[in-house]
Image 1: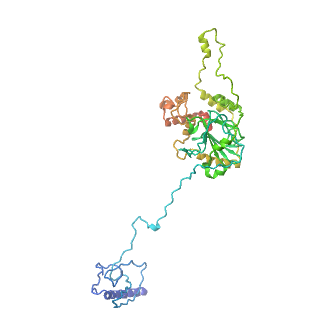
Image 2: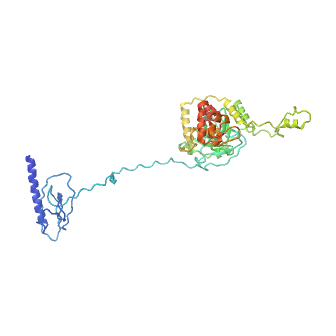
Image 3: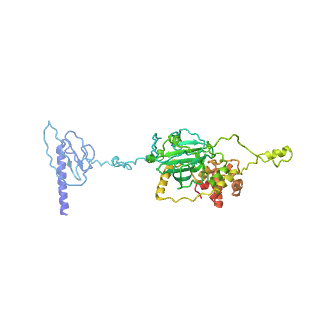
Length: 468
C-alpha cells in the first residue's frame, strides 16, 4: 500500500508539472485547461509539442506504463530552432491519443505471407536424336522375313507419343517377325497403341520394341531366351494400326541412351540397312498349324526359292461327273462354299496351340523387366486417355475398338457376340444384334457372360491381355 501511495503522489506531481510546462510553451493558451491544443477534446495520455507550429503530432502509446520524470529547458534564441523533447504524461494532461494501426480483418501483412508453392513442372520430353551409338552386340539380323518395304519416318510428328520413335516395316499379312539378336523376351502381350507387342533385350543391354503383330509364335513367352532369327510372331495391323497396311513397328533403344527413357530411341534406318537378311526359316508344328489355318502359309514361303515356271491355282476332282452332263461338270468344278466361321476355327486353332510354361525370372532379369516396363509406359496411351477400361481394351483387341462392328462372320459388336450368346444373356432387350446396341449396353451383357462363362468366352484376346 505504501508503494502504491507513493506512486500516486509521484504521478500527480508529474501531471502538475506537465500542465505547467504546457502553459509555458503555448502562449495565449495558458488558461485553456482541459482543451486539446489542436482544437479537439483531450482524451489521451500523450502530447507532443513543437515550437515551429501550433499543430500537435500524436505519438503511439508506450508498450508498458512507466513513470518518468523529464526536465525541460527553454531558450529564447530566435535564430535557431531547437526541437522540444517529447513529454510523456501517464493518465492525464491534454492532447489526443492516436490508436495503433491494425490491418483489416482477414488480411495478413505482406511480409508474413507464406511463399506460394511453385507449380509442378511437366515431364520433360526429349526431341529425336541424330546419335548413332554402337550396339556392341550381335550379330544382328533383319526383323522381318521375306519381301519388305520401309522408309525413314523416325522423328515424324505423332499425336499419341509426340514423335515417331521408330520405323514401319511394311510386309504382307502374316510375314514372319524375327528376333534381331540373342537375348531375352519381356512384356509379350498387348497395349492400346502397339496392339500385340513385345520387347527384346540383347546381351549387350540394348532394347528392341516390336508392335502391331497379328499373332505371336510359340516361342514368344515372357522371360524366354531366344537366338537371332528365332520366329517371334507375324506381321499384322493390331492396336492403333487397325485399317492400315500390315506392318511391323520397330524401335531401337540403345544402352547408351537409357537415361533419356522412352525418348532415348534412335533412328533404326541405318541399322536396318546394315543388318543381314535371313534366308532360311524354321517353323514349329504349332506355328505351321497357325499359318495354315490363317492362310499365311504362302506368306512365310522362302523368298529365295526358285521362281516356278507355272503355278497351280486350283484343282477339282471331276471323277464324279458322269457322262457329258454340263450340270454335273459345273457342280464338280464349282468352288467350295465359304465357311463364315473361319475366324472361330482360327481362334480355336490358336487356343489349342501348345505354349511352354512361363519362365521364372532371376533377380537380374526382374530388374531388366522393370526397365522394360518403364520404357513400355512411353509407348502406351498417356494417363487419363478416354477408353482405358478392361472392356475398351478387350474391344480394341476383338474389333479394333469398333463397338458397331459387323464383319459378316457371325460375330457382332465391339466384344464380338454371337447372336445366340447375345440373346441368351438378355441382349434382345436392347437390340436384336450387339452391333446395334450402345457401348454401355454391350458391357452390361458382357458382364453377364463373364459371370457364367468366365474370360474364356473371349479365348484369344483374354489370353493376350493376361485376363486368364
